[in-house]
Image 1 (cartoon, one colour):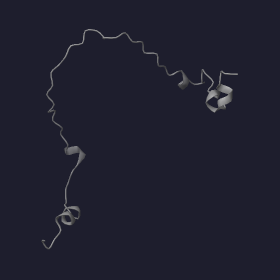
Image 2 (spheres, rainbow, N blue to C red):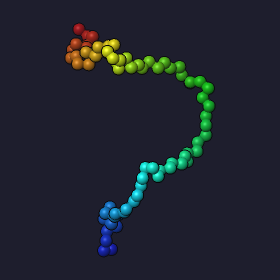
Image 3 (cartoon, rainbow, N blue to C red):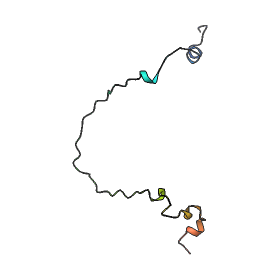
Image 4 (tube, helix red, strand yellow):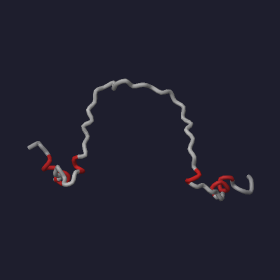
Length: 75
């Protein structure tokens, strides 16, 4: 066995690196074929909304703090 453990040498290695964000110049390297999608395969309706974010609130969110028995529809 060698005098120095290679794992210990790797995890304890120190290096002085000058990495500035302003020096970063990314290069696009992904190459993929382009596909045309003339229409959706399935019909869909985007039903999500942001009505709870309106000021003043349009809907009361008291159901979020309600007890489970109050929300139950069974007798």
